[in-house]
Amino acid sequence: MPTRNTSQPRIAVLADSDTRWKWGALTAYRIQSDIRLDGYLLRGRATPTVRQLDEVGARAETLREIRGADFLELMKDTARYDVVVLACVGGAVQAMLHGLAHAWRGAARRPVVVTGYVGVVYEKLADGLLLRHGADVVLANSRHDADRFRAVYEGVGADGGSVVECALPFLGGAPYEPVLGDRPYTVVFAAQPSVPDRRDDRTYLLRRAAEHARRHPDREVLVKLRSKPGEHTTHIEELPYQKLAARLPGGLPPNCRLAYGNMGEVLDRTDLLVTVSSTAALESLHRGIPTAVLTDLGIREVLGNHHFLGSGCLASWDELDAGHRPGPDPDWLARQGVAPGARYATAFDAARARVTALRATDLPPLTPYYTPRTAPGYLPGILARYGLDPDGAPLPGRTAETAEPGGLRRLARDTVRDAARGAYRHGVQRVAPAIRRWGQL
Image (cartoon, rainbow, N blue to C red; front, side, top):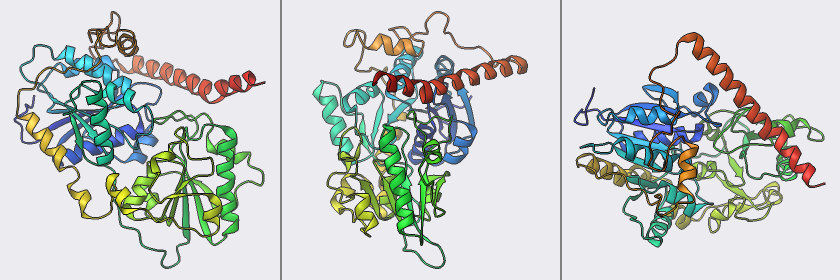
């Protein structure tokens, strides 16, 4: 079994959705390029499909779906990995931190634990951060985020030294060049699974994209979607744009269509990126692509577009229809870690140095801020959701599987699990919205 002295570090990434897998895997490679990367997909409602994984494009030596208990059982071997990246929702990170603390109790040495956020942090700042406290490194995607993160930790008397400024790991790609040759001017509306969440609002945005295409028949308008119906992403999508498009009066014009694929490849042919608050805006701005953050539905915290105050990117469909091309504010870009140019090449230097230094030391036990003493009415419920008791030990009946089941049993298990996922998604996408509508009658 390789040890931490092996020249090629071994990194494990635990992720619970397609975008978090992308963030975790690419973060691992940013921390150190020459690594052995093993990926683990936490079994749950948002476990990505093969298509989603192919679209994300992040690669690993091995990639497998796993239960939290199985992951913690593997991590008992402290020599298996040098670094563990927890790329999960806050509750899962907190549960794994307590589970790892229990699994590593008494160990002389242990891996470095890294966590962070997939993109723009515009809601549940304190909640999400405190659920991530206890990791050795909490990555902040910008100077703006790093200052906020430290303020939250220091505000509750917790150690803020784990916060390290870096940038989003998936920024990159060729700098934007205006349309040349036969390629049509391309407008991309980057849709989001849960923003906005009202049917009327989502239909409005789709209708405006279609109207923009009709007003500009020489342009191509792409509605870039994150998932296909039945798939789940980091956020639940109750009202897929595919279904809304099928019911849109007049349908979509020939030069407006739904699109899938890797966002980086879509941005290669984008001349104007339009969104409500998608992280795709940061990818677009990093390349220098004209980027519009819509104000049509207001500038509201629930939409996340308030994050772009001062960016110079706020605009409405009416303004875009009239030919407006937003120009970003350079100071805002610098604070958000998306300024184009050579600065991005050094954005991960501090994180790389911190992880390297921690790997060379005997690390103390993991000590999250939340404990049965500081949060007795909150923490036990989070841990129980992931099969752990308040001490971080597996609950009775939730111990790890000792071996991968045989083919017939695995097929039956997968069939049952897929059926359960289908039933859950049907409930989320069809039953729940209907119940809410009935409640409004």
